[in-house]
Structure formats: C-alpha cells, structure tokens
Length: 477
Image: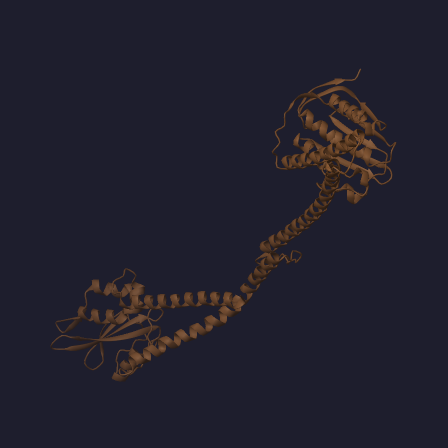
C-alpha cells in the first residue's frame, strides 16, 4: 500500500515536471520564431541580430556623406540602442547615441572581439552588419543594452548536431527525473505516512478494533478526530448489540422453558384423559381440564405480550385516544387487582390529590401499563408489603413500596425487554415483557417513566404525563 501510494505521487510529480519542461521548450521556440510583437523589449531580447541586419537598409550615402532618416533613428531610441558606421579602414565616420567608451577606430581584431563578447563595450552587447552601397561598402556597429540583450557562443559539429541535441535533451530530462524522484520521495513520505495511518485505522475498524486512538494533530487532524468518534460509536454499538443478544438468548431460554412447562402439562393431562386404561372420575376429569385451560391461557397471554411489545416497538399500534379520567382509571386498576383471588390480601393504598384529571389517552393500554407496574411491586416483594399509589397534579402517578428494593445494575435494566431480575422467584416468573410493555405504553402516550430504588428500603416508580393534553382537572372535595 505504501509503495503504491508513493508510486502514484511520484508519477504525478514527474508528469507535472515533464509537462512544464515541454511547455518551457515550446515557449522558447515561440519567442525565437515570432517575428511580430508590440513589446519591443521581448523582440529585442530574441531578435537583435535581425534588427541589426534590417537596419542596414536605412544607411544611405549622399554627396559623400552617410545619412539616416530621423524617423529611423527614432527606432534606435525605442531599443535604447546606438549605431556607428565604419569606412573601409575601420574608422567611425558616422554615429548616433553611442557611449563615450565606444572607440572611433575598430581594427578587425577589436571588431571580432566586441562582436563576440557581451559587455566588451561597457554596458552593451555589440552586433555588426555590412551596408553595400555600390561604390562603397560600409561596416556598421549597433549596440544594445546588455540587460536586454546578451549573447553566448555555442560550438557544435554539423555532423553530430542532431545526436548532440538529443543527448542534451535527454540528459536534461534525466537530471530532471532524478531530482523529481528525490524530491517526490521525501515529499511523499510526509504525505503518504498520515494517509497510511488513516487507511490502517479504517481497516482496524473493519476488523472490529474500536479502541485504537489517534492523535488529533497534523493535516489530517479532523479525520483523526472523526475516526476516534467513529471508533467510540462502533464500540458502544457493539457492546449494546452484545447486551441485546445476551438478553435475547436469556429470554429465548426462559420463554422456551415457560412454554415447555405448560405444554408438558397440557400434553400429559390430555394423554391421561384420552387413555382408555385410566378410569377417571368426573371430578378428576374436570380438574385436569381446568389445568389444561389455565396453561393454555398462560400461553395465550405470553403470545399476546410478544405481539404487543413488537407492535409498540415498531409503532404499529394505533392509540384509540379519547377523553378519560386518569384518576378513575388508576382506581379501577387497583380495584381489579385486589379483586383477583391471588392478590385479594395485598395491601394497596391509593391516594389521589385530585378528583379527576381528564386526558386524551387509550384507556385500555394505560390500564395495562399501570396494572403491570403495580403487579410487579406486589409479586416481587414479601407478602404483606404495602404498595402506595399516588396521583398528583401534573399529572404524575407514583407507585411506591418499602420492600426488598432493586440492585443498581438491575435498575438500569428494569425496562429492558426479556429481562428478569434476581428478585424473580420460580412462582412469579413471567414473560419478562411486563415492565418493557409498561414503559412502551407510557412513551407511546408522550409520557416518561423513571425508577428510583434502594436495596432493602424499597422502590419508587414515577410516571409523568405532563406532556399529554389535559382536558380539565377537578380538585378533591
């Protein structure tokens, strides 16, 4: 991975440099071969020899004197240039704008020397031309500022020019590539290293290593912070998934056990009733049928709980809301529980502070939730434990007991589906859905439910229905 990223980075750098080099060469050729431009300095820097040769046409010989029109001399000013015209002996017989250092006589050697080397006449680059006027042949010298025009000699063999040019081109290209590789390697090391860390971090997350932490600094600071947050989220989700899977396995085991027990009873008593070898009295037959019916009812209730909690979780239940006196609903629920033969000796104290609190609710579902909560307080405490039900304005419903209490870890899981606490004895093992259903019903109505408990001191469950639409509230008389 590292070398693949480095190779791509180096390739990008090399391609960029090659393109830049080619563009530079094209620009050079363009400047050398463009003969028309409005920028005199650009023209001067690349075409001074042509200017010198063409300017020779402006040198005229009249009445034994050298003559150049003023309009043509104005061009010399545009170039900051000067001119001297020499006779056959090298003497300067005409000059315009030449510097004081310009000689008045040029020997052939000096003429060659001045022509070849930039700055031989201080501050100027010299070009030489010939003006043939029939009866006379003049030489002339033109000087251009060396900051605009400079020259250098390039010696080559015509026989090997093309091969030498190829060697020069590819040699330069090789040097550029070597430098590009070196620069690109060291640059890519700094860029590829953090990218590799990011890639490794993502791979670790994919493998389930969520606890790795990365320093939030450098050019990938925000990426590292996001990876840390993602790791924490995935770790939390994984723990929650394991927790749910564990509860589901426990629940399935409990449900399997709870179904197997009544099924065994139903099957056993059915076989006895149908077995011709058994002579059953009417009382025995009636007893066995009642047991079968009881077990069937239990299984029916279990499946109904499963269906209800699924519907509540996925918001598939349509609440049949209507104005209902919540105080009356709680009172009826308490009475129904006390009228049950198994709980007729239970001590439940109902204390409302208002005569009526009318809310838009689903009466049946709310009664189911209150019943589950009160029933839970009764069956998971010793017999004779008092259960107090308070109804306060808000409205707020509180269910309080002073029984065994609930350990802190179990308080946090009390409303989890499939969960049964350690206080649940064999005689009171339900489906593990009652508390979860109660919470789902309250929240489906827009309310909240909280639990406070201290071990060996008791438990308080508070239902807050404040957010529900109150129709009216009547005070107790």
